[in-house]
Image (tube, rainbow, N blue to C red; front, side, top):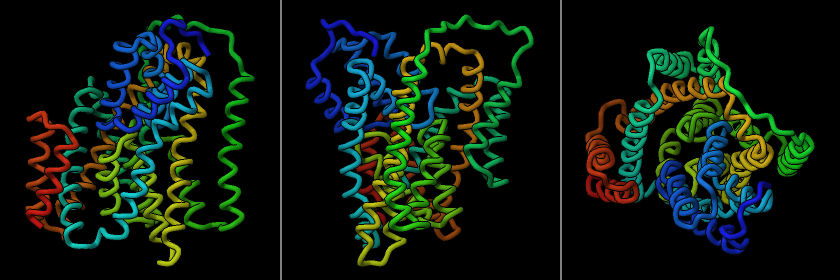
Length: 412
């Protein structure tokens, strides 16, 4: 752990309570969550220097997984080492994860009732608007050169037409930008601190043990079950999930809906809406997908046990790699992010993400706005109105989602 001045460093209890408070109030997606942490910890409380927070963001952008969670883990590590990072990350995740379990049960148990279904229709329409607005914002930020547009279009076609993996599309985007290096591009001077490979090996070793424990139990008790397949699938997603939450959800949708048929398109969209109503990272939606897959795969008498088990395994597989990678690489972050090759690769990944999310947006829009193959005016009007509220009127996401639910009831 790097030392922080004792005059500004909080007590362990104060830091823990802050992380728990953040976990209860962190609505608004990764950008809003990161902005909240920056304002409170760097500007108001002065627990962390601005340079250290910038390193946290750099590391989060470099690694697969949820940026906000990884930023919080890094801040906890910066203050109190590995125990601080673990406590901060768990406190950030805990409230949203517990709340989402309850919402998942309500959806699976009562989602078919007419009033609930009407409200969910409005919520799904807001999700269509949310993804569309996020896509436009991301495209404006990521697509800066003609080559970026080419990578985005190619990645979208790779996923939509050829039905290949989103992760491979992101990797190809990185390879294309690496291959486009200018012949006389200067090489940045990178600080090379003394590396503690023993620390890296210890953290990764502990992570492997923690990953193997639940897998071993499931493999012995129910080999080849949906629970085991969900665990292995989401582990692969967690390690290859670059490009932000929507890119990862797009990949998971491809795996859960198209490849394995564990859940339906309606469940995919409803999960995003429910996760947006809870605090914490958007990737908590993968916990909902695990819950739904376990519920649908079991007999009615065992649905609750199967769903809880799959939800736990989904969360463990999704978020454990973030803890392991951040705690292992935090001492090396300054050296890593200064490398020109990594910066170029991230640029290519960002461009490919636009194409992948565009494909996801089209698929979700078709499922919500054209449920019977023809355009349904109800969700279409709600989605258009939600898009205007989010992009033009400055209305917050919670209020927009509440209005969408009410509109679904009124038009249902």
